[in-house]
Image (cartoon, rainbow, N blue to C red; front, side, top):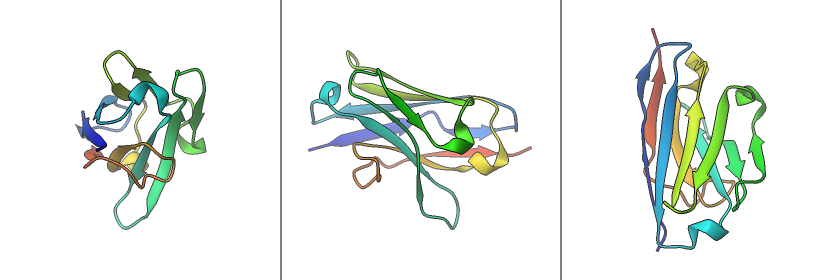
Length: 115
C-alpha cells in the first residue's frame, strides 16, 4: 500500500527556512500528483501546495506564494517543500499526500516557527 514518510521539520525563528522531504513508496510515484497539507493547532487540514506528476505544474495557497517552493525527484520517489521567510502562522504539522484533500497522507512532521 501507499507509504509516505515526512521529515525535515523542526523549530525555526521567524524569517528562517526549512526544507521538508517526503519519501514515497508502494505506488507509482512518477505518475501521481502530490500535495502538501498542514494542520495548525486547533484547526482543520489546509492544502498548502500541489505539484503535477511531471513537476511541470504547481499550485500554492495564497498565504505561501513567493515563500514556499514545491518540487519532486521522481528518480528518488521523493517530494520536497522548501519553506523560506517562515512566519508564526506557518506553525503546523505538515503532511504529504496523494490527494489534494490530504485523506491519504503520512504521519507528518512538526514545523514550529517561534522566537
